[in-house]
Image (cartoon, rainbow, N blue to C red):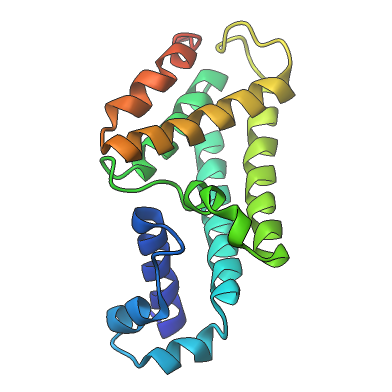
Length: 186
């Protein structure tokens, strides 16, 4: 693994567990066993790091969503996979999805970082809209795929924040349980 990848992995871990503002280049330098100035070689500014980190994360999550869609036999299976993806990202209540963590502090970001955050959210919403649009009847009561996607996305992201603030994964599963009752086994 090269130094830049190591720095991105550590930055993501720190942001997901402590928040973007609590992560410093000194933290990254310590984790990579390099000087703080060397971190600036890879990422001249914290904003440059944020853009690269979110872009990388978006690519990774898009691959995970594609794998969920490919493996799922039904729309309900895809929805369950999506819920599981966000549940696993909680890491037993110790972390949240990178873009959930970043969205919470979005007022302090530059336009390039906000564009990357928007790109992540757009990607996830497009996937959800397609899931609801192509529903095979295994998700009950789908009326409007776009509104359903917005609601489910807000649900999982908000449920992550509540679960993280309590360090209690059951807060996530309790919050998503009502949606899960709409999923039918086939």
